[in-house]
Image (cartoon, rainbow, N blue to C red):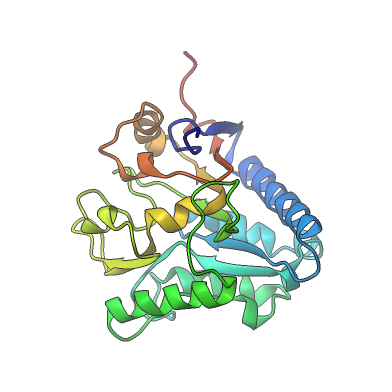
Length: 258
């Protein structure tokens, strides 16, 4: 059995600037949604997990624009979260609140199709609650481990980013969540970033048909180079996908010519 697609071997899609980058990715997401729904039948949802961050915010703003919003299949898409800070959705640092303001409040997506992470209670309970939500929404009791398995993917698309320390989602260096191979969702408290977090674990991310890293800016070039060189000390290096893993990059972050 061949190894699954991973972060070090993912295809690189490079665009001249951030605007061109997010436009290309928005069109790619639309194409993936249309093809997934065409293949899956009338009852099939397109399932995507979204991340926070500055570059994704530009993507969500574009997706909420009238031209794009009029073409996207909102009623047949279910939206999940890759991770979030465990703060109220009204908090400035909440990814869920950001998604609601920039995207969901501006497009015709049914509220029942939006699955934000919990923002109250005990973090461990909130993580279990969100895993239950994933199980109920998808109808899955186990995670797919290969693209050819009879078990469907948990997600069609998992949209990721990276930090300058090599973290992705809320999988930060040195945290015990990196070793969690049983839960789909976990909580953690990074020493180097504010707030306790809820995050998808490696197994849940790996059960995604398409994993897409969206990265822009020269500040990420060095860490991207380390990931592509298979630096296993970086959490992002260990991300895999069922079918394909793709890097969407602007020219500023792209590896220099060999």
